Length: 288
Image (cartoon, rainbow, N blue to C red; front, side, top):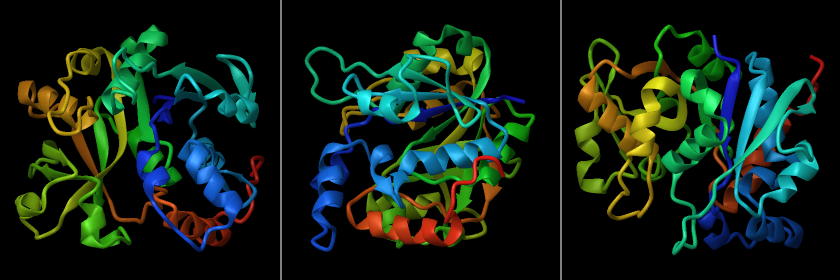
């Protein structure tokens, strides 16, 4: 059972910076415009603290945070060393997602995982979890991924349990799952006219919120050769997944789960996240 989690925090946070919320304080607005979303302070601590807290509750021990080359602020919170920092019993290390020459933004989520595996090559022969830094996944979701016998898996969220309108659901990734419980298709940010194609036989939508379990020995090649999306100009995890299941239709297991996943995409999510955490995690008791 894996004890390693890779958290993707090297993105440019473009949607957060471009969004507008006139009800935010000047301090919150400044943070939203200048920090990684993972480091926006929610209830007196960075958002990432709460994700690390649920990871620890799920039994994870080793965390690799993928940061940008300008990500030194992470080190002020989670340890100054490049690797093997102790943070409330978690071992925190960093991987840097370097931006290729000629680009101004990182090359996407598949590239972020690839760079982590290249900087920590032992992961190329291990299993590990991967998730975003701006979603608050539950310890239940992480425990289910850790416990599955499948080498590669993802949490397939029931759209009805996600407390978002359909136009926001379409900004995530919709999936199709076989009757045997394997991923058969996945699309990131689908166009409106094709959304209905991803409705399951029971009439339900299954949503990927970018939390996965991967086997490094199997997935590394697909990350390395992942093509760039023609519209978004990034290498995305769903593209690498599609290549893997094209070669092996039972490569990726779907783990169904019906629960909400708080998301920090735009400025108007900051107060929502604040209220959610005030109710559900009012205190970070690391010694629970």
